[in-house]
Image 1 (cartoon, rainbow, N blue to C red):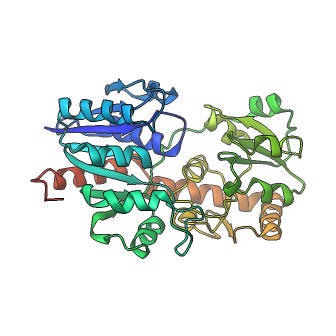
Image 2: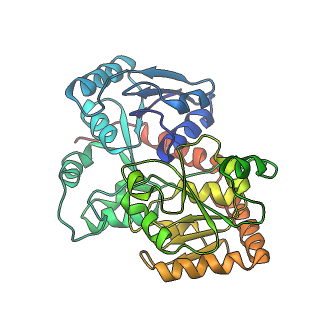
Length: 355
């Protein structure tokens, strides 16, 4: 039996957190015994865990010496064979704790603009100092793997496992969501599910406004700047399937740094066409001209033209939505993700090499 510790700061509503939950629930119980450790309180996605033990360390701050010591004590006491983390701080802590075969998740940029040649950040310095303490690095996109390689990291340690999305029966209609936000039937509803931060490109969407209604789902530091400018700001929601059922098009206008965007996977699984920028790993998710339309980052006119094209062509919206759902089922299924992690864990449970 391979004992697996899955470590994250808190089970918030987010892509890395959703991936942890899918993995914890999906691991074959005949071969793997997982438990989840959160550095802070459990968080809202904890209720989605099924038969998985959850240990919430309950620390007030994730980045603090006491938090690291609490996690290290837990891991040394429980002695898992695999220690899987998903985000930057947790990755560092698990590598430094010195227990088990450490697998780090690579799901975000190391520098401010996620491009080689930008000013080195403290994150990059910390990553260089601890990288070899991880037995494997799992990237959710080829884009991030290639970026790490260009920064000089060993490609032999980096495994690409794309994120996954659960396919379920879409909720019928979406009239309740439209009534809630006062959106009339027949009005094109364009949904963007993303944190309200500058790099997600909400400003570009507002500048590309046309004969449609934007619904921005998420929250963040740019909320005040976006208020009162024509988009509906819904905040964080747990009813994303219902919101997607009410929508006509999903959009993500990121300016840089995407890995394997969970919001686009959710939209494709719901059978919705996508308009997105060619940012980071997005072209690995969206098949341009088939499941959606890709445009250059920051190109407001191209964004507007893509949305206008879909607004005026219901047949194209339906065709792209159907192709997206088929692609989500074929390429991004939870079962495929779990089996690839299981193969990696089985491979890594031999003797630890010297650091």
